[in-house]
Amino acid sequence: MGYDTIVEDNIDVLVVGAGLGGTGAAFEARYWGKDKKIVIAEKANIDRSGAVAQGLYAINCYMGTRFGENNPEDHVRYARMDLMGMVREDLLFDMARHVDSAVHQFEEWGLPLMINPKTGTYQREGRWQIMIHGESYKPIVAEAAKKAADKVFNRICVTHLLMDDNKENRVAGAVGFNVRTGNYHVFKSKTVVVGAGGASNIYKPRSVGEGAGRVWYAPWSSGSAYGLMIEAGAKMTQMENKIVLCRFKDGYGPVGAYFLHLKTYTQNAAGEEYESKWFPALSEMVGKEYLDTENQHLSHKPIPTCLRNHAFINEVNAGRGPIYMVTKEAFQDPHLEEIGWHNFLGMTVGQAVLWAATDVDPKYENPELTTSEPYVMGSHATGCGAWCSGPKDVSPKEYYWGYNRMTSVQGLFGCGDAVGGTPHAFSSGSFTEGRLAAKAAVEYVNDGKADGIKVSDEQIDKRKEQIYKPMETYNVYRNAITAGSVNPHYINPRQGLDRLQKLMDEYCGGVTVSYMTNGNLLKIGLKKLGLLVEDWEDGIAAENVHELLRAWELRHRILTSESVIQHTLFREETRWPGYYYRGDFMKLDDQNWHVLTVSHRDPKTGEYTMEKAPLYHLTEDEDKEEAA
Ligand code: AMP
Image (cartoon, rainbow, N blue to C red; front, side, top):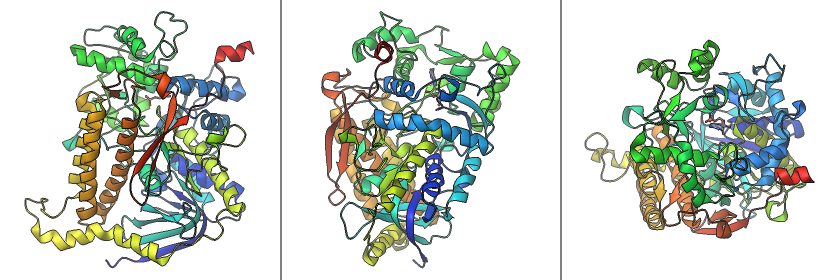
């Protein structure tokens, strides 16, 4: 197609995607690998990329161990409870024991952390969250990664991982194209750390048409972390554990600072508290272990995120919506009013703009809340991602195969949303995971595990042909276009995305079906997805380089979606009411499903195999720990 091929050779650690996870990886790779060649490939620009691009108002994962606030074990217990038991405790503990040092570094690098004037320590928003002036959080952290890396390639959409031609199941780099120049980029590398983010926009969003792109998670998060790893044959875990979030309506403004710091609360249209009404029936569904409504003192605090969603969704479905956030009381305090606005101006400016544009002043009017469409991610309150090795000192044998955060593909590591079973990492925990992954990647190289890697010209040429095929398709068939964008020979990326979002929504528990699905629906969804895959492969067309980007993002979203449907079909229970429901198995079933789910897609045939993996509780319950 006339595009140049640019080859970057002899890389030791290639970081794919430089959000908070990837920046942590580059930084730490340099610490352990002074002599190593470290390269970053980033789809946007590292200064403003990833979920933190717009800024953040809080760091949601900080133990405060030096102030005697929490221990890593406390955080494992919290995340375990919030996820209805389903977490990788080894990975969580490992992240939690290192996360504070990452936060202290951010402060050294110039991130303004708020200080509580009474205690002189960091201003807490909640037990795990500390407040920051974080509009420039990402550029500050990016600077450290830029200094650490030998080269940063911005504007590169990585489409595939390269595999070693000498040894099965060993990674050898990645390929992609520059979204501005169109040039083909080849990165030959001994290891790859994938930090390319979770997936938004695989489900039909509530905001469509002129509001498209107004979603909660970064709209450009195309599930590339999952798409790249799945296609390379990496095992995945907990992909059924998609997340639904309670958010301010239409601007998708987060609620954490409001609930936790401003102490606002919700009520239904009649001004009533509604949550507790739903808990007795919910306790029947999930069991007393998770929600003991008779012995309130034993009941978990805070209530797991999904269960709070469940009450919200059911109250709305009972006709008593909308659900309001009661801000009128808190906003009478000028300090809290200021915090309420600052929270959005530094993090989700669209929410503040939307309120201004629609005459909503939270001081005089309680704003509406909504529940979002589902997202697939592993760093907020759910744990989708790759099945990764844990650290040697804490992981049982089923969770350990040599290198921390290495996937089931040799030399392929993950961080942030890419790693499964590690929810509640948020920004700081993702950065920490990047550090842990890169440290292990350097060790892998030093141990000679990448010796003898070979990438044939054939593999590189084959990928090039594949990558630009959508542009060829467009050129061949462009004369048949009617009605602006309709063509009997192909679909364009927007048409493909609309189809994907509709089928995920209707068959895999999106908003229009109130997050409900069942085995039959999922099987129909898989069939329809198969047809979409065929249409993508035979005839997706890209008019220009920008559409080529959209075509490959769609490819990653499709691979992610297939994994989500397969996992949702496999887990025959409703483990997280409020995230999704299996109508044919409406109860939590600990007898059969107190396990982690692991999938493998055969890279040659595309066939899926699913298995159950043991769920080890490595951290004692608090009462047992105290007794000991
Ligand atoms: P969010 O602003 O919703 O993304 O959440 C930020 C942080 O606050 C996360 O650690 C959430 O788990 C936590 N959070 C949000 N809402 C609540 C709530 N009602 N109770 C306890 N924790 C919450």
